[in-house]
Image (tube, rainbow, N blue to C red):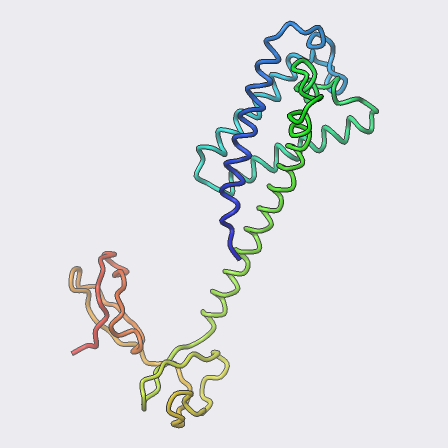
Length: 233
């Protein structure tokens, strides 16, 4: 499963929030009489609530557009979208029309509610809510899958067939069993291979590795410089 769609979603959400924040700041500096009325949910003048909401949107927008931590960006988006949902739920339960609230004021002074922009503005919170929570669950599922695969690999052993050199991977619980080699059909006993030892060419630190890793290029665990694993002479 690929999560390549999450980064474009975060950038698109940041762009929408930035546009919404700038619109709210424009509204708050206007002379509409609606802005002086108390906000039904918070009791503050709608002008201040609009500025507050715009400020939160601006902060989250900058995090989405310029941040590098995807989990942090999704966390902020989910937090903001959850607040939208709680606010809307409270307005519905109090029988308050959104156009008289700090969020609804976005579409009232600019008369956006009458056109397609008003419809888009209405569904932005839904887009953020569904997108952010879906992305969080997607990343969580991918991490769990990766952890499971890594755990399965850690519980398996890899050895080379003594006859043909084919690599054989088997579960740790099967050690000691005799099976035919899947490549040459020779009978082999599954066992943990003895580790070989060599010294790093640069720092002379000791390195242990299984025989089937001969020829692989790794970073020395002591000095972190690239070396090629070779059979000890």
